[in-house]
Length: 299
Ligand code: NAD
Image (tube, rainbow, N blue to C red; front, side, top):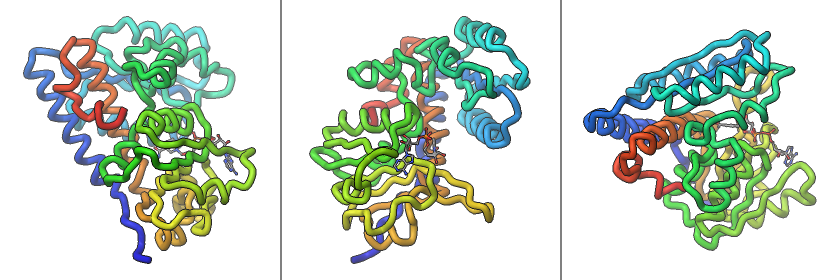
């Protein structure tokens, strides 16, 4: 069997960011303000600092107005909620991203619940989740949107396909299952208590791993020709990054495969920009189809 076709997330993300940039230019040409993104970073978690820097840079390049708010790890819940309330009121802010995880002692769910659903560009608040499962027009979490975009762009058939998502987090696994279902796939969500995970995976025409365990998914778990999307980002003791899928083994069996790095990762930031543009278009009452035409392709 010929090796899997690689799905190039870097290229897809660059193309997508260029579309966002065109949407921003169009919005501004219509006399509206450029989309405003506020990123809130509490504490000094090293990985979060890198993510926030990358988001900041990509948002500037897309023509957004970006405000990165760095707060000390000693910030109280009350002050953080007051900060979110202020951003909710600020007309120049269209998207708010509170970088998770928050330092110990801060209640993440209360902070997420405090976000204006129209500005919740991570798609995590209850209104956003409800909209996703009921087919409404909320904002959808960025990583699942990125996975769907890569599948669509590669031309993977989803209608009637058997899709297995490993991982049931609010951020990745659950919203991904909703998006696949909306595309008429037959969806299974597998997780840490699933019995005989290899057999469940072998059923999948589309297999998505979002676990956080390096190389958990072996080549023998993959149905020949399946599309395999590897969401996992795991730092190995030698400093290298590995996905949740044993890459070399998967390459021999899968029909399509995303690499790590360079697969889903770059799409997450691209989709954050897309969500913020969408939020700004809605706020300006500009038909979103004209500025964010990908919306109908992915969600
Ligand atoms: P999480 O820890 O919230 O969820 C992990 C899920 O995996 C859980 O639902 C758990 O039930 C399941 N699981 C754990 N061990 C398992 C096992 N042995 N077998 C089957 N299922 C098991 O993680 P998350 O936030 O969903 O992230 C998952 C992975 O994706 C991580 O590696 C994370 O770094 C990565 N991630 C990448 C991006 C990106 O932009 N590419 C974005 C978010 C998360």
